[in-house]
Amino acid sequence: RKEVEQDPGPFNVPEGATVAFNCTYSNSASQSFFWYRQDCRKEPKLLMSVYSSGNEDGRFTAQLNRASQYISLLIRDSKLSDSATYLCVVNGDSNYQLIWGAGTKLIIKP
Amino acid sequence: GAVVSQHPSRVICKSGTSVKIECRSLDFQATTMFWYRQFPKKSLMLMATSNEGSKATYEQGVEKDKFLINHASLTLSTLTVTSAHPEDSSFYICSARVQGNNSPLHFGNGTRLTVT
Image 1: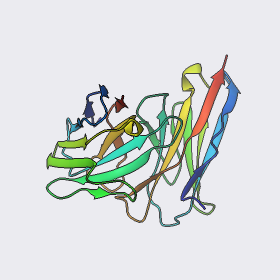
Image 2 (image 1 turned 180 degrees about the vertical axis):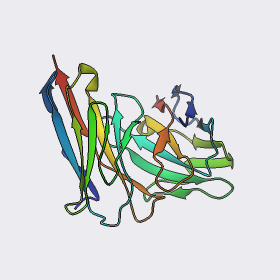
Image 3 (image 1 turned 120 degrees about the horizontal axis):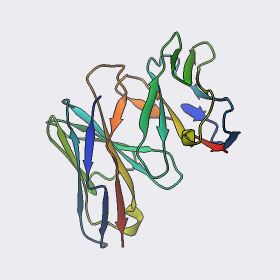
Image 4 (image 1 turned 90 degrees about the vertical axis):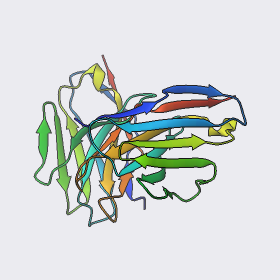
């Protein structure tokens, strides 16, 4: 089992719809969780950290489920500009080590 | 927010030459920086962890003599691809974390290396 797994997609979603995807992790001791977005041929950019109680930033909601060891990202009222690859990141055996998922590709269609 | 600057953004070099990539933390000190490589449509792959004042830690399969890392100050790490070959063509990205165990990574803009 990979340490961090994501559905590669692509998720093809009409503009305005709500889309959600998960990321599972194998290390139950992980404490730090992040979502990044990466546009084609660009560097990853931090979208949001994921807190234990869940957190929201505008149209984006991140949640953590420790029991099932996954984090989720929900995007409401999707925009064309949301099209990107979404990467989840989880710390490994130490907070010093960050492990990346391979990313989920999202395509928002008009 | 924290800013990481990477230079150059794009470089084309001939096979056999060496290329140096710089990574700077602009508004914070980074005792540790990370170097990643990403091939087209593939995920980020950690190459090495750069430690200020000491030797870099390389991931398995990454040749330390080919990818020279120097972290001479708290704000600068460099990656030198020595004797570059076409298969070294890739997107190289550096990143750093602000101090604190739960802080995220901040990335440079990346360097697209093409070896002809």
